Length: 179
Image 1 (cartoon, rainbow, N blue to C red):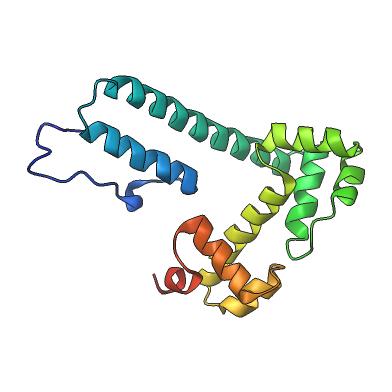
Image 2: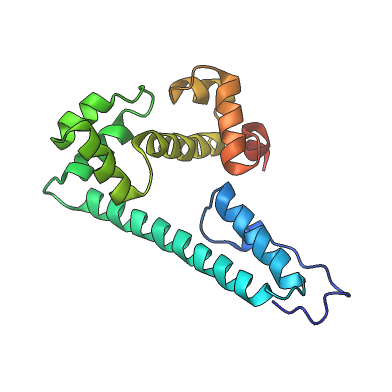
């Protein structure tokens, strides 16, 4: 970032330049970095280094997750995580039954949670929500109604779907569909 001309130009983050999706935590980190680049505190360099390390860690975690999932879909032999991921993806509208997932993975409950989290860096419930929201975005692009999408993806109420979508993406489903 060029800060020499900061008095002439306001520094701002532009969402459309990012080629990967990120969550509110990554967005908050990017906002913090923009702020750090524009201030002149004594520990500015140190704080920028810390924020950059956190950003790299988050991006590598996301990339690792995508690689694991890519491999899970391409291999013929079934690893426990592959079977669990496929089961969740085929049952997006159903409530998550951890006991079934543990049976699919042939693991105890505690081992399953540790294994799942180590592979995908999120809990099974977070994974299900991520997949539901990704599918919701695709359905919104196709013009389906919010109510129908919410119920098709297992949300109990339309307001629950709208609130969850807005928390994840910072925009309501209706506004997303209009854009």
